[in-house]
Image 1 (cartoon, rainbow, N blue to C red):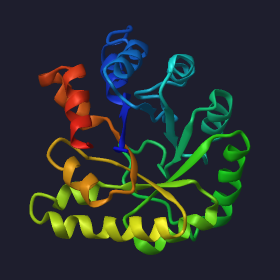
Image 2 (cartoon, rainbow, N blue to C red):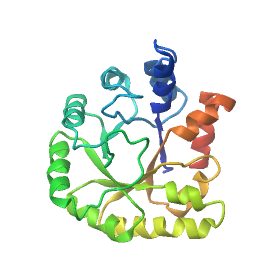
Image 3 (tube, rainbow, N blue to C red):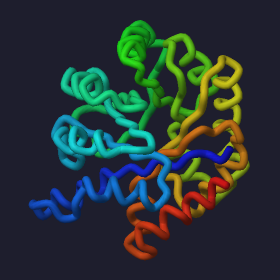
Length: 239
């Protein structure tokens, strides 16, 4: 089975918020991404609601007929309350700081193990699959299993940055981390800066890869290729 593509629609909300009003329509974008072949929809609400708003998440949830993935920092009580209210298929735990421009590091799952054990169990109690955002470090990837999480999401910025110079060197930490996590019984997701240039190779080297979440690059490409065509282009990279 090919890796699933979850489309992160945060950038559509960013465009809407820059002008006010409801154009582009975030709810319609979620509907259309599904119709155009996306295997899931991802949103990452932040406390300042500078792109996806909490009200967007509540509006989107009932119309998702594929898979709904909500990313965010569970140390924000508002975020936890939202996830437990909406009950998405998956919650991805990301250690963002307030006001952070974009995600830029994974969890230290050893330092925060006690906290993550409680948080993972809380979401799982409500039948929500949990994925923990981690750096491409074999030790951290394996140790994530001790939190009780179902999956890890590998933070792929470093891969994307170094891919043009030496793709084999760029992918190696991810292959090692994925193998370490799989040995511990964890499934593998990935995301951040994956695009049409580097996605196929990444997926080919990590055959265990369950899902990628892609937003910025995909929405940027859609400006040139159109949203429906772009989603299909990305899906072909995963076949």
